[in-house]
Length: 295
Image (cartoon, rainbow, N blue to C red; front, top):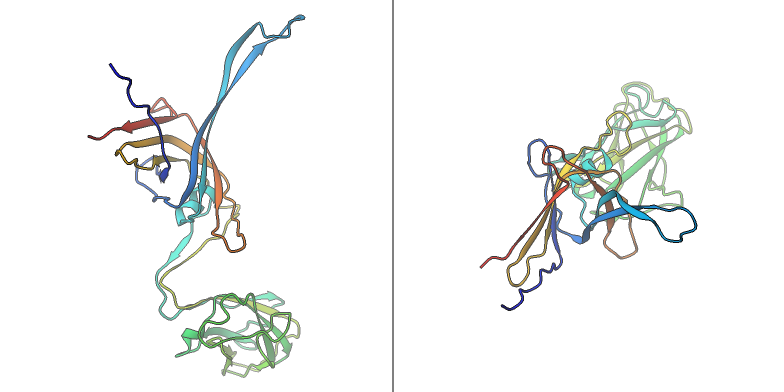
């Protein structure tokens, strides 16, 4: 009888985490650079006397860890690996301008004596540019506006910086009672309060803008009150071989804390997540390995 072909694995296809209670999948990670399940055990040696060699050795603890190298960043990854559930937003055909809030001092934003609101300028929503904005009071009735980055400054009508402090207004904007003051080239307007405008010089306020989009996501990571890192199961699927062989690892109980977010020059972001594979008492195991040779 001839020897059978050796069992070999080739490539990585997907990583699919699932809810341990319901069995439902969180989603599929497909842009993978690699994945491994490392089972590292220790041997506990008995040493004594003048012998340079152990008298006996017994098996100790086994560390089981999944290493996941990935260039894909889905909402559920932030939930499982960073302990924060994202908020997904539907398409915004007119963009989105957040509520302006005081940052330094308390007089910039005021429904009576300061800026009552900042909103998108009707018919100029195409000029909305992604980023964070700072409004600084220059006099009791005027402000300058600053913008966080020029990454999106060319969207719609080109914007420009006026100095190295990232100011985008060539001259101070006047806030008038109940009136609208446009931020030129940025698709935004500031609306004054209902009374006599009387802001304090040096006070600031901030807001954020999303341009017209097909969808967006926001998440705040590191909150103390709601930071939860749930346990999950995961299925690692090797690449389907040319002879149709398929290989799967089902890790029953997983736990991960942390997901590095790195950005390199002219390169797609890549991260490596370390995941502990734990013992599941209900299934009496850590993982199940499956391999099939279809005919």
